[in-house]
Image (cartoon, rainbow, N blue to C red; front, side):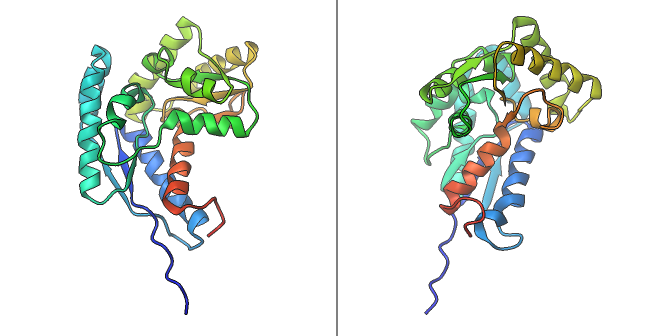
Length: 242
C-alpha cells in the first residue's frame, strides 16, 4: 500500500514592502518543485501586509513597539488562515523580531539567522552588510553572524546614506536604475577593499539590482535564502530530495 505523501507545512508571509515580499513569494512558488519533486508544486502560502506607509512612519520614528504590533497582527491573520510558521521578507523590521517572537501564535524563521547559516556553510569569516541605515546600524546582523563565528562589516557613513536613499526612493518603488546599480556596486567594491569575502544583501529589494553577475563580491541574497529556508522548514527536505 502506498503511503500518502505528508502534506508540507503552510507558510505564512508577513509582508512589508511589495518588491521584497513579491520576490520571496515568487521564489517559494518557483523553487517548490525542487523540494517536492513535482512540477509546479509548492507548499500552501498565505501572505498579509499592512500599508507600507505605516511601516515607514514607524521605522523613521524608531517606534519598534509599533512595528512589532503590525508584525504580530499580520502573524495572527496568517495563522488564522492556517499558516504553521511565519517569515518576514524585510530585514529592517527584524529589529523588532524579539518583541514579536515572544508573543506570536506561530513560530518564525529569522532572516539574518538563515543568512548567517548560509554564510557559515560557505566558509566566510568576514562579510559586508548592506541595507537600510536603520538595519546596518542595528545589532541584527552582527549578533547573528557572530553566533556563527563571522565578522560583520558595515559601509562607511556616506555609503550607508547612499544605500538608504536608493532603497527608499527607488527600490521599494520598483525603480532599478543602471546608475544606481553602478553606485551600489562601488559600495560593494569598498567593502571588498576592507577584507570582506562576501556581501549580505540585507534589504530584500537589493537582489533585484545587485545581481551575482555584477557584484564585486559573492552575494548572500537574504530574500531567496529566507524563501529556501521556508521551503526546507515546510517540506523537511533539501532541494531535489522530493
